[in-house]
Amino acid sequence: MNALKHMELIFGAVLAVACVITLLPDELERPARTAAARAPAMQVVVVKARRMTALEKRHSLEEDAGMRGVATGS
Image (tube, rainbow, N blue to C red; front, side, top):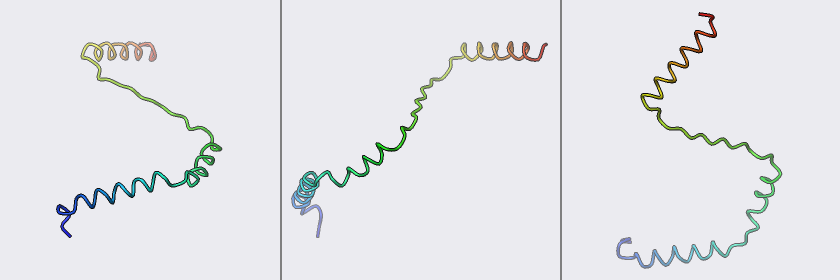
């Protein structure tokens, strides 16, 4: 069967399957939701970053060098 010749038939079949799936009962998903609701909440960490400019890098290196001098007693 050449798929290009039968695109309308394939589209109709996909549409019919999609309609059947939307009409299926929701009960199959409920046990998973209740099990997830009983589980403790997972901690979510959001990390946002951007590249430092050359000036920011220089300031960071200067602060780091200054902190090392204080920490070592130099």
